[in-house]
Image (tube, rainbow, N blue to C red; front, side, top):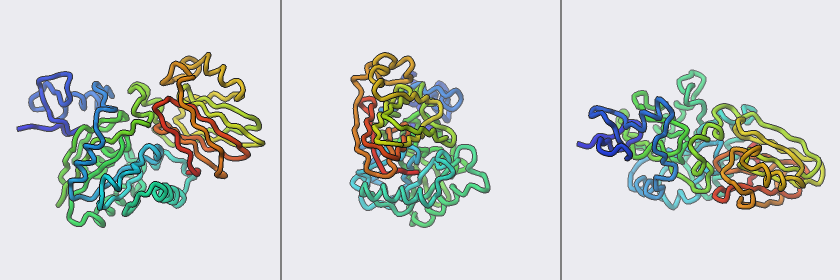
Length: 359
């Protein structure tokens, strides 16, 4: 009889140490990979790009179940699935927006809800409801945190005697949410994308909940960055906006990951919402090429590139009063004021979205 890892869902086996699901113990409940992640944060086998998202979605589509679509609010653009209606036709979907605690407390829930609904409408995505969740890692049981209760209420309201499937992008917080919802679950959680490897069944009172492998987008930085850098680029506490006033053309280097050139016609403001561990170097735009050609990978680090000229450029003429420049998988700049043009340079595999400001 095949046994499955309680942490990631992989079939347990003791034959191949290099393969998924390996454990040296016959009675083990967790594979060695999960054990190493849980106790030492050692991912052993990286699955950043090892899971086919189309196969996951096909398997979900075959089930008659309520869908909890978990979306990371901090990394909202890279968590969107524009084709979700096509992949999951006629499904009841509840959007569970996680990591609310990472966003500044000054951002009201009402304004955040308006932002989410606007973006869903722009992408042609329909959901039955939206639930905001925050502080699930350490504060899920705090009496002042109603996140879990609101998710349970949504399940009761829309389940209609069906099972429940939890899906979303890698690192969106699916397993963390399930561990908070189900007192007896013990799913493996980490900052590493691809922690859950197969469907994991959790028996609830009268129905089942299934955790699923995290979907991946090839245009997200999280799919390409080395595992060792994840704790540097992923924020784990409330974002502290870094505010810059400018009166001339300026360039901002976020480590060696992103270059933002802002061309102004007067006074303007740039606010950075990224992990505080990523340093921002500010300088004159006219000198930016020389800086990146000489110091990429040294002063400008960490970086995915060795040659600045191989990075991809995105251009935008500012139209909104306040506009976000979103780097998929990393965070965003919010720009406002008398700005004429914006130029963004990133790794050739990474996407950039320009949107009306979230905050």
